Each structure stands twice: as C-alpha cells, then as structure tokens.
Image (cartoon, rainbow, N blue to C red; front, side, top):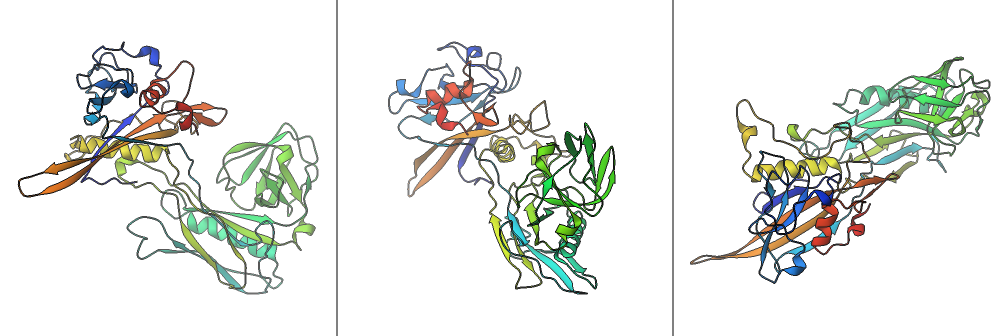
Length: 432
C-alpha cells in the first residue's frame, strides 16, 4: 500500500535471526558498531538502550533503532513521546488470489453442449492501478468453436487451452491460470509409480519410481488431490516408463505429487461428465525499484452463454506483512529520510533489509512479517493558525518458520520479540 507523504512516516525492520543476546547492554549507547544488521532496540533520546517504555514517565521521549551495519547510519524513528503514542498490532496474513469458475464448480453446474458453436470467457480487470480503476481492460479466453459433436469435455479443454495461450501474452505473469475441473468418477492409479514430478507451464509429467498401467491417451488425470475441485488434465500420450504428456500446460505449482494424490478418469467416463473452467489469479512479480504497487489480482468474469453458472469461489486479499508490502514501505520510508539518489542520473538504488524469497537463502516461509504501529498526532500552533500533524512508525517484525506457520517468539529470544515486549506487546499475539 502507498503511504501519504504529508504525514511523518518511518519504518523499522527486524531480522528474526538476530538474537537478543547480541544487543549492547542496558544503558550502553547504541552505535553502528554494536547493533547488527536487522537488530532492533528501544533507546532513550541519548541512544542508550533501555529495557521498556513502562519504566518511562508520561512525557519522556524515546527512539526505536534498527542496525544497518558497520559504517552505515542507524535507522531511527522520529522522537516518540510516551503518553502521546498509540500502539496497535497486525499479525501476518497471507495473500489470497481470486478464484472464479465457469460451469461445473465442484458441486453443481455445467458447461453448455452445442455443436459448431462459438463460446468465450470475458475477463474485466478490476485491479487497484491507474489503468483499470476507471476504465477496466477486457481480456478474453476464446472465442473457441465446438465441432459437429460438441461435448462439455471438448469445450472445457478448448477454453483452457485458449485461455492459457491468450493470457501468456499478459506482461510478466500471465495474470490468470486456467484449469479444468470435472464431476467425473475417478479411480486410483495402477502400477509401480511412487510419485509424479510436475512443473508449472510444462506439458510433461515425470514418473518417479515406476510405471503406470491404467492410463492411456484420451484419459484425464487429477494432479494434486482427490476431490471434485482438484484440477484435471487430459492425457495426450503415455511415454512409459518415463513420463506422461498433457494436452494443456500444467498450471499448478512445481512439485512432487504422491501417487495417492493422483487419480485417473477414463475417456469414456469423461465424455459424459460435467466440466468447468477455473480461473485463478496469478501473483504478479514485484520489484520495488520498478515502483510497482503491490496487490492481488481482482477481476470480473462472464461467459458468452448467459445461462451458464458463474461461481465466485474466493475473493482476492492482499494480505498483511507480505514481503512485497514490507519492501514498498521500506522503500518509501527511505525517501522520506532523504535518500533521493534514485532521482540521480544514473540513479543509485536504495539499500534493502527486507527479506525476499529466493534471495540469500530466504523462502516464502522465512519472509513473513507482523506489524506494530506507533501512531501519534501533534498540535502545531502558529501566530494565526493551528493544525494537527499526524505521524506513524511501522515496526515490521520478521517471523521465524515453525512447521509452516510464522512465529515471533523464538529460543533464544530475537530482538524483534524483545522489542515487542519492551513496548508492552505480548510477542505470541504477533504469531501468524
């Protein structure tokens, strides 16, 4: 989210790997030499480390400080005054992408059956960007035309193929993923295969540990689950003993799928089943230096046959504490601190402390943040006027991975956890 530049705004980031035991002793002046990169601490106005704001009197002032490394200036909040600052928290919430289904939705519905007929899906972008707020862009899957013996299976496959191809032309990320789902009865995979290796945007499914004996070209396979909401892919060829080739590009996450979560649907059963086309928002790549605002995709999907069921399965959510949001806050706060080298010719990039998946050994599980916000309002008096000035400091506290869930409390204590406690916040309240 973008912040207002007419208010005082600063950002502090912690690194959960910085242990409290590495902080300077209480009463010691904090410097670039004794405060490690990503360590955060509470100090008085003389930059001496203090234990907690509970030990201060109303009207006493303090700083929150982040280490940036030896030789680099400390990152400090504005001077904060006890009694004027309101403390609030917001724990990490993952982003959620929108899901909309045309036709069969896993429970009910179907695609139309018509011979030699054109069909298409129209997508209106509703993103929170300058291009699509007032005049949304329209994108299409199709038109596609059924043959002289049209079936739901045929139409579903045509729409998915065309959607994947058309949306692959959308910049950077394709914008939407297109998958088929069906009501068809499935059966277990037979053979000696142990698991299946799948890769996003690949036609090839690699067999691991053995072969399959009951899958043929023209059949469908479920990849990644056993429910009627699991995506299905039509088999173009079985290249036993090594792989299966799909009719459409795999749209899920690159993974190894256990044989128990792969099911087979015969061509005969699929030919009379209900089918749907599932549209799922694709996370956009984010580069804060390109100054892209961060948001999950939002869209409205309609179908050319107005009698066909369109199901809004899941709404989009940007989340809270996603690394993209934290990166944008960090970037903007540096500008407010006077780092305007990005305006130079050539520009000089601002430094980053935010953790990014795939950089420095970080993953999606280690790049989560929860927030403590300190907000205040000052009365600004002049000779003939009075105005209120607002300010806020956001403390993005990095979370440790605990079996897939982010937690702030660690052993030994980390500096973000210690800072939360010093501000009167229970560290576990910031767990995911």
